[in-house]
Length: 232
Image 1 (cartoon, helix red, strand yellow):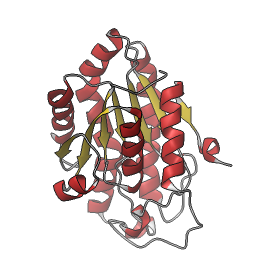
Image 2 (cartoon, one colour):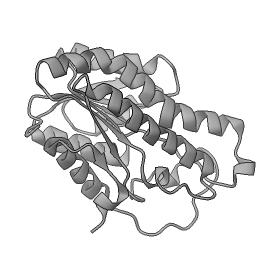
Image 3 (cartoon, rainbow, N blue to C red):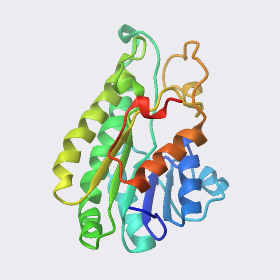
């Protein structure tokens, strides 16, 4: 892929710190966007042109609704960027069942459902030689599980494993997987945990820089962005 102009792209978690930056870059590249968030007002406040759709990713039917919204808006679907996620902190012994369930549902299960719902449209895109893609952001904790973030690390490691295995399966359909694993990024997510509070963290990457690296990887046809791809 050398250009995203005219590509129909669904951005899941478009109102988040990283999703917002990716959406802005894709808009500048000329992509036809479908922007997902949990809050309609925050979606409107983005000021980025595109179709919008709300939905709770912990709900089983949301993934199919997002794909349907993209198809209704643009008639096709050429790419998905899953930039949504939740985080929790604290010793594993203190993590509530509800927290574990939500971490797994949003960070791991929702992308699986999203791929299942989108596969027919992405396969059709491949048949039309539009180089479809599915981007996940499992982050550095999928490479280096972190103490006092055990459940969160597990949910992201599950996402990374899914990306590896499903990526091999989808390659025969011409669907390209890209998993990005940047280190701590100043998205504000750490200030909104669903349980616990963040420990002191080093200054992270700027979301705009991480977003640029991800978008460049999509354009250049890359299939993996390990943590080292964001250094320097």
